[in-house]
Image 1: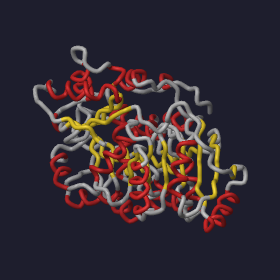
Image 2 (image 1 turned 30 degrees about the horizontal axis):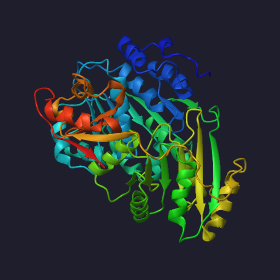
Image 3 (image 1 turned 90 degrees about the horizontal axis):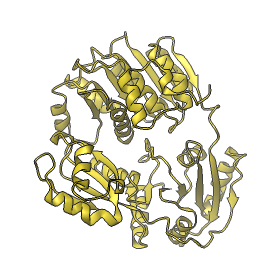
Image 4 (image 1 turned 180 degrees about the vertical axis):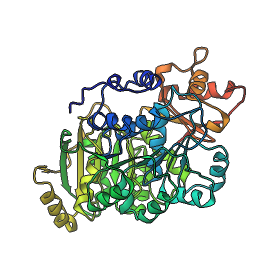
Length: 461
């Protein structure tokens, strides 16, 4: 099916269609065109689609289209493997739901205290997005009730099974009504996925768009390095091939931290994502990278699960992964939506056999073995154009993005086109502004109340 079909051809609520126009969604991606008519018609759907294919908007619109916002009961549950993915899904569903008044969407994930979640659950949310372990804990405490659930979504189901969530999924299913719509999305059709679908779905419509998607246009390079020069060679590679947004993979959290420190010592704005960070630190790292106030994100494979940053320019393998298949997942984060990307691997003498395995797995990739060229660019692509400011108020203070934008731009303040992403969380918010406008933004926030109250504003570095 062509991906030139417009959302306006669907039987969606007028408020949803109007909001889609406002946020610039006009034509459907392949997975949206194949699945949304089936979801709207009430069928269960088993879909195979890659990350970045538009599947979140597909199931988000499907569950929102039948949501009754006037009835405060949990009507939809989205389960996914990681906190980061849960946050991204909730953010996208909030964007899609802008035209619907009083929709309450709550994320329930591990790694954060239970008490704030318990307070948020005193009034049932319409939609819950969460990880299986934390959702099951709330079900056990009877703080989440799913008796009125109409839509169950299992996103990245193959990853959930790989991460050992099979028992939690089975336990959660005991709490959900049998008369429901179940939407299952996976990057693979392994036997385990077929078994899950058989248990949880009723005659699902099967959709596979992976063969019809355009192959990613990734230029792949591998460069011989020594252990002693790996850090300096990474800097040279970043300056030669990097862009505004670069993802560097390391195999251990220790290496992540050390590489980030080294890059910062070379005046490269880098942030690290690994298992030793608490949730607020992880959130800040992801926000700063996504809003372009940090040019390099260093991550382990586990920490990067669920990471979906649009327009990623390049992926760098500081070290090759242990399994060849992981290499495919790593580099697949660039060159999405028909765009071009770059993948660069630093290969030490002991890794050359591992590289041969990768090369055999991708016979048509034709990676280029080369030295690292000297960077000859008129401007430094690694210099971020934005700065992140943290504000000490969030959704629980009834703040909205428009409130922050209004204060920043009031009375000749920051030009509107100099304000980037605005990300609201429960007790704090982040706003990205162009570097040159940072002092003015801080002055605006220091002297003007937001909804009648003053908040602290700090630059995050």
